[in-house]
Image (cartoon, rainbow, N blue to C red):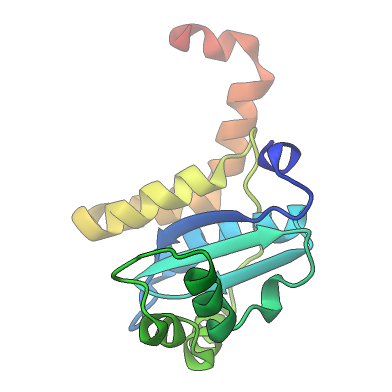
Length: 167
């Protein structure tokens, strides 16, 4: 839906929780699901890792080639005054070591995509926040993910009578 609303050279930008020190399995699943979904829809996806990961997605080809200097120049040309987006901060966020670390942290995960009828992004988001604030329930989320997530969602949407309590 977002892709249809974008200009031909437009860039979709979104953020997800991240970390530059440790990516838990829940955080890896959440980021991986959204990353896989973006890659399925857009030709070019760029991740800028941090405590908040910034995802850029586009069908425009130069997305991966944008350098810290180019971003800084664009800020200056357009006279954008952003006190936090200094040249040094942009160089820090776009440093190659963070990207390498991010990709290494993403290794070994299952490829899963989010969709309207299988909203895995919502499930992984709930699982991630649960792991932060109610870690004793993590086992329930893992069990549900392995055993019945797909079956439960399929059952809900395949049987109109199962939606009656929600209508």
